[in-house]
Image (cartoon, rainbow, N blue to C red; front, side, top):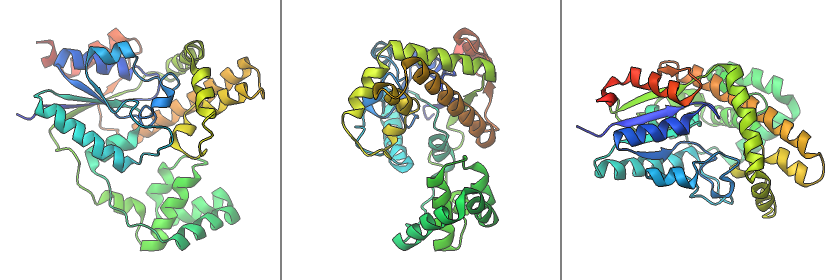
Length: 309
């Protein structure tokens, strides 16, 4: 029988990493990162990567192995993740994929669309039209062509809005239709999944407390080191939640107390977006709504009692 693949998703600060570590220990598995920002080695603290001590307890893959000057796509992660899963299965062990990047899980379970490259002139036209029309009118036009894409793209996400329109303008086919015409990257029946979905207020309290711990644990030093590299601001690592707010503290633009509050606010907003995405795109995944690690583990075992044997 093929070794099992476990998928653990959830918003930031929901307890995913602790649950994944306990599952890997119990099942004799290895952990694979499914978080877009924990790929980057430059921000261990700010992205809440597993600690060195946690990584030593079971094998971890795809954590902190990309330089911030690189920008990984979903496709590149998927290829690396499938390779890691293959290696883990070759050792006769289950793979435990954990993270908060919903698109990564969707690529695994639904496949990744081979959308044609759009011509540069179409991309330029979409960018100019967004500027001229404004987001509201641009969204309205996209909604008529690709309602599914418009509905799932977050406010102010200019990149994905223009990308969706570019594909329709260039191919005459909605991006959502391209994405639907795919095969899963992992075989149906070979995996089991769970989504952590703690109560909103409890999740927000965990977000706030974790930001305080990050600042005390060296997040400002990490931000300073990354800022000193003067990398392009559109790189994924430069968009880590909290980076901009703490960089403003280092630049003397705001005091630490205000910078921390701003970072906490942005983290809460990010967690809310993640939770909303998971509820919409992974509505059929079993839920764990407990907050503390022991209760989460008990709920997980209730879903998978064979692990108690």
